[in-house]
Image 1: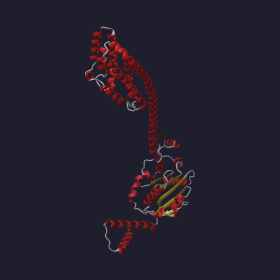
Image 2 (image 1 turned 30 degrees about the vertical axis):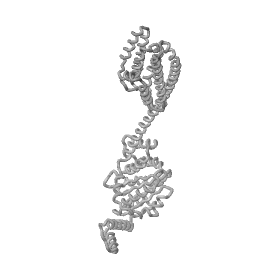
Image 3 (image 1 turned 135 degrees about the horizontal axis):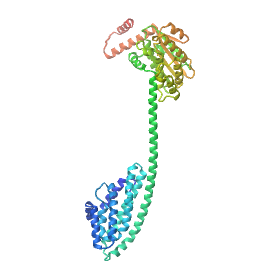
Image 4 (image 1 turned 90 degrees about the vertical axis):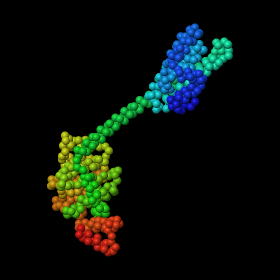
Length: 478
């Protein structure tokens, strides 16, 4: 019999084979079996033989009841399998029930235990395999015993006692081997159950450790988000997304293609670059172009970029602690976990709900965070929008970062033309949003727009010369 099946499958197959081997009368008894039937059959045998076999039959009936109840769990049947067979044979072969009863008692003792094993360790294949082997032993015992009694009943020898003695000897030998196998396989089941228990215990401890780790991970993540939220409540990314929609492709390339920008970007030391121009010359749009250019070129594994837009209409964006708090928040948001030293510094600086750290505190925190990356780019737009005190603090921090030596820090500042800013940052290269540069962007925008309308059929021009005249006129009136 194949044993590489689950315990339920092995039992079901053996049970079906067992039922098929019954005679028609025994099958009918199986369908109509009850414990009362067995008891009445045993009582009839007692009255017939008038011997001490009656007490043995009652013992046998009790064993059958215990075994049959356990068997019902596995067979999912309200009828008993063994009762009708052994009950029908009781009147003929009661003398030999004592050995059968002993085996049934052993079986009845272990079946409930096996059921518990199946429920607790249903995923442990080695234990399921061991249980299947024991079930085969049980079915083999039942089948062999039934066969012996059936042969005895069919014997033509006049003296029934003599016939049974002749038949019992080979059965007794096989019965002893079955018991030996049964006991050996029981030990294997107990051993595998012990191993399964240890595996389950180890798995339970592993699950417990995993759950503790998950709880700790969630706690740290909550702590990380809480600390990040203390740094700044501003969201410069919202304005950046809005500027991306407004910006036309190919505009601003004059800045990112310039020698000044390329040198600033690629030099191996910290540095600063500034850009100024008249109001309305497109500095903020240009800043968004620089941000996207850097995002597309840096190595995200060891480099980072953060940015901030100062807006006169939003007073929060004009405060030094919000400018650099937001920059810090962006840099730390890229890290799945806050370094312990950084977290400790944030707690110290923002202790007891204090949301306005000093300039020195911000520099201290920036030094800790910027050291997490080999190269960091910082873009600040609209510095001229801030008040004089804020400008002074921001410029002090910018100059500090531009000389940072623990890592490479690149700062670019966009502002209107401002004498104070120009004086403080006079040692750093500067690009101007000149009229010529602005004209190049306008020409690029107009040409692209006209081409798009021609392709879409929204504009029809039959004379190529007229196309150039339209572009020139639009640029002039822009």
